[in-house]
Image (cartoon, rainbow, N blue to C red; front, side, top):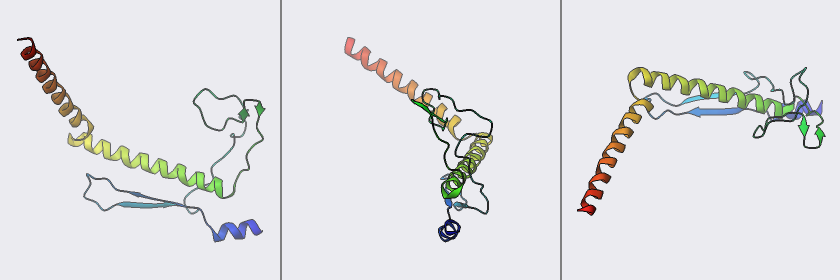
Length: 137
């Protein structure tokens, strides 16, 4: 019972403020807490056996260099925090995807910047060629 009382006094949440420089809207503020986030599964999902991870994979695999790991404690404030962070990332990804799609429809954004970058590279290439010709003469 003590754990529940302590957790109630110190709830876990993540507050994200998204400010998009090209938007005229005010910043978007979202809070992720126990009202809109589930606890994340910290260990392996049910039915998945522990296996050695591939190089560069840092997710929990249930294995260590010297054998299987004991499963992590599920639930509690850390599982809630991980759940809040995962929901925050999903929300951020959705927001940025919408902004990029809107910019693409309007003909601005990365595609427009790439054309400008290509023009700058061509200009630089032409100027470099002129410098070399002058040095040869």
